[in-house]
Image (cartoon, rainbow, N blue to C red; front, top):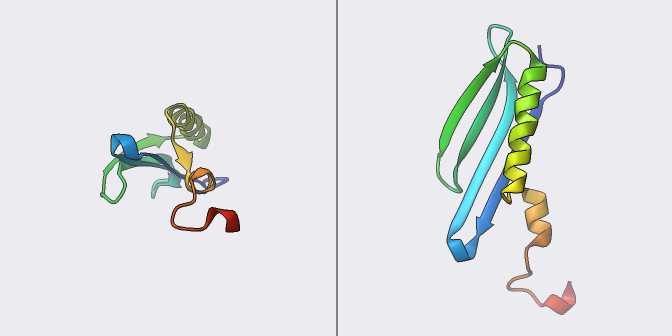
Length: 97
C-alpha cells in the first residue's frame, strides 16, 4: 500500500539545439502489494521509452525518485509551470503584459 502518490512530469527544451525532451516519474502500487517506480522519457511528442523499478518498500522507491529528480534538475529539466513562467512572450504586445 502506498502512503502517498508521487508523480512528476518535467521537460527540457532548447530551440538552438533542437532539443525538446520530457521525463516523467511516478510511484505506483503493483498487484502483489509491492511498489514500483516508473520512469518514462523521450522527445516531446513521441512515445519514448519506459523503465520500471520494483521495490519491497515505498521508502526505497522515494529515495530513487528524489535522486533522479535531482539529477534531472541539474541537467536543466523543469516542471511545465516553471517553464511557462520563464518563457518569453511571443506574439503578444509585451507592454500589455
